[in-house]
Image (cartoon, rainbow, N blue to C red):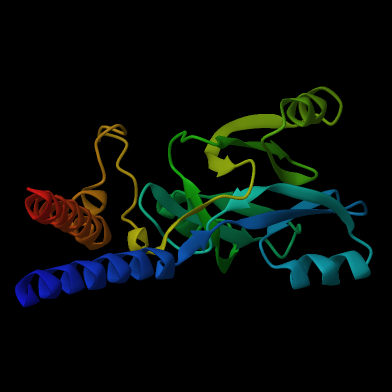
Length: 234
């Protein structure tokens, strides 16, 4: 009887521990990528910092809402969106290509303004292409909106330069256990974009493992209890 009670106690402890671990698991949540517009120069700026967009609006820029959602830290299947600024003409360049980001500094006089956020390098569920356009007079424009893109080309003379990356169209989150502390390496155009990310498969999911063990032991305890009850009736 004491042995059975001990087994049941251990099972209950593991079940509670598993539930608490699952509940305590933090989430990495996307943040809005704000878009502001300078009517005087025709420039567009994209930032995840609400204080920066608010400061610019207070200085006369126009808020154009949220361009999309990006992650504030690196997670599997995302890549840094580098931000560069050209002081002479006010243009902001955003790119996931480290080579292009470096060339912008060393060849074209842009200033390094760090990483704007982390975007998907290929289309994922809930994302849309973040398309890039350029106008020699107004600089670069980025959008996921096809109507916005059409107006930029047809009415303002922008030329499309392709897809920068893919950003989320609504707020989303992923478990913090999937987060990695360093940016992923530069995408290799020769590699297969559909190949799995090794970081997403190498590490065991201990929460799932503990939960499975607890569930199995609970089921065993149920069988033992049922057998004991049936034996007492016969």
